Image 1 (cartoon, rainbow over the protein chains, first blue to last red):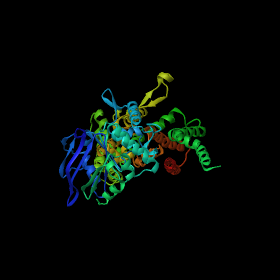
Image 2 (image 1 turned 60 degrees about the vertical axis):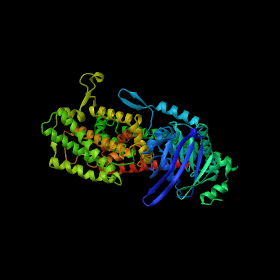
Image 3 (image 1 turned 120 degrees about the vertical axis):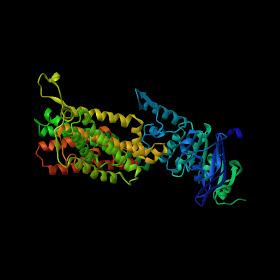
Image 4 (image 1 turned 180 degrees about the vertical axis):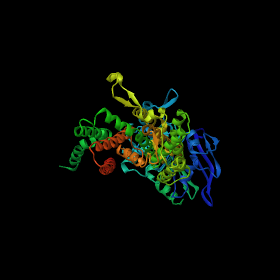
Length: 248
Length: 343
């Protein structure tokens, strides 16, 4: 089991002035595992994700990628280690086509003399391949993101996060803004990532999400580890209880 | 008729209209130019399409098009540059003073673009590093500052007479004796060639380089650009610097065309530039617009002014017409957005 460990946080604390956002929180994630993180507003879920992605530096504690201790100075560092974050506000440019969004900041180029020009052909080809691999259906890779539905946008955001062989994907409320009929597609996409060997951490308030895609669920309460269980050993009612700080 | 059938019919009815939208979005503006040319040709059959008049239009728009192209890039980032009219004047004055001081022509030639470059960089640094709430404020400030400096260094009086090599850029003629026989009066203005080359370079820059793509991304969603690891501030500085640089080139062309530097040079031309960009289909909200559209916008302004002048329409009516066209162009953009979000 421990050979499969791709990400670990050991007794991580984060203080903002006198406020304690996280207190000695532990987290581990295995290869190809989907971990659900639940908790009430202010329980520290988002802070923990920001620590894992390198946006915040932990005040105490340490992070391990592939069982090696690392220090993250920026999200760039965690990206280089194969961790990608799917932002809640999606972070897509609506005026640009799907392919441009997926490769934004990492566009494939070709050299002509001393100049680097965008390789439109290669980007289109890579986009189509990647969308096919994730079984994401859109009319065309050239479609502008603003023309897509909320679920399709979420799919593009996830495609963007996984375009460069990410090993770990963090998702903050991936279904929060979606129409009911689109939620299923995004959850399928998460299961698809798992099949491809990607490890996923999902923050969600929706028990349906947690109980559809997760292998394991952990609850934070007031910035501390509160409870944790394999999904098969727990129930919705129990997890809802954890969120409210109740344990039998 | 049940509900599903009715919906299907609605869809069919609007489909032709909806399908025509992208066509008009892309080619509507070129269609408009063709209509304008046809109408003016009918009204002024002997004059409007004459070689002399057509080259005259191109010579007039060549320096204005430089401002429009620069302002266009700024507007794509959802910004604005009000100072380009003053940059053109300051770079023109700098050029004139260097010329008067007896510097060699190739130094004089470099001075206008160099001043434009520095002015633009000053704007860009002010907007990003000083955290101005909006580029409008920074460039409104420099609109006064740059023109003020221009008047300070020149004493507020015109300076005339430049070297032949400078004059060629704005006023040069490429003879077409090869096609029209020895001593023919037909020619192509040098400034037209320069304009086409610069527009082509910036078309390549905006459509085929990473920085060009990032400029559009910043206009679409600066947050997304930042999350993608793009240094938004640095790109904005590049954009404002290039805008200033183009205004400097505009100053150089104007120097050649008028053979003088004068205190009112480029006065209010920033508004013409913004108008051309908006008429050309760029969105004021950023992220939308094409280089070809800017060219079309500049041509529409140029053809309109020229045609109205030929027909002796008063300048006052010209103002009313241009203003109306701006509002109409933006209203079409609003309608288009409504249609896009309805689906």
